[in-house]
Image (cartoon, rainbow, N blue to C red; front, side, top):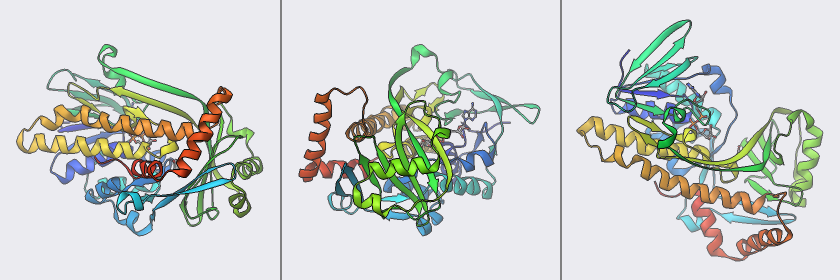
Length: 390
Ligand code: APR
Ligand code: PHB
């Protein structure tokens, strides 16, 4: 089969790219290793920057987000019993974020591709990239017992951190930067009302905790746990007790608990690979970079990559303009590194680093005190949290 852009991976990056290209008359085929049901069932992030919201509206998948998502114009940053409200709207000219789960977003994107007759081939095994150095690349795969092949002009590697695209670039042509943290986040989803209307990011001597949500009846909580923790060692009662111990008193007292409907551990990692282009292959989203979840930037960075990449491809097909494709890696990576800096800073501010000497612990306290006393520092946090300009 022949298409203009072969897209590997049907996560938010791949689906959104195929939708934006389609709306501009550019043809694509999406190849996804997992089943659609598997992809739609994954529980992931839930905080959308306003620019990403606008991109989704432009892609025609904003209606349910606008009707059911909740706009937040503040977050709480706590440390032991002190809690600080960070106003997001004031210092940013009225900007905010939308609480809308990636799970819901992915469902809307799949439905939109289906409604427009888009080719999204799930359960595609052994995806392999060929000819990315030349001008006739192709992708081969196996599906339902038969071999398939897609000939194309470009390949978009949107297949996440463990995908095949990044690994198809000769190692000598790709630089990587990485920081692995000695802890992860244990997440729990429960059908309980959120403890607070706004998110609470809580630093504590026992470790970090986050109170988040998906809706007025669905809460998402996280606890910092040592790397390699087995969720099986954390029955619900232990989770709730530990969460209460790490929250400021008022929040702990208000916490409504209930049975978990999902519980899992995610490792924390900062990772960047670049350049994000090799020949006719373009990397986007988690395939090129991972941020620790503390700044809520993972999904939003996928959004900015797709903003740059879709515009570049549409310009090339529209007028033969190569500037966007040539500048893609530089533009995308400039924003990625700033989000890496912010995510690292939030992570450093709020987690307990087991190897920290007492000096570093005092610095962490001073950082929180400075934030509490400085409008400028709070404004900088707000500016980053709602998202730097594309
Ligand atoms: N062949 C085909 N598909 C693959 C392959 C492969 N070899 N390897 C991985 N995939 C698929 C995965 O099954 C997944 O559905 O690629 C998709 C990648 O999706 P995500 O991991 O969601 O990455 P991305 O679309 O870039 O979204 C980034 O989503 O995963 C979160 O934390 C992440 O919030 C961030 C955002
Ligand atoms: C989430 O709701 O899953 C969530 C929210 C904010 C974060 C990370 C995760 O920073």
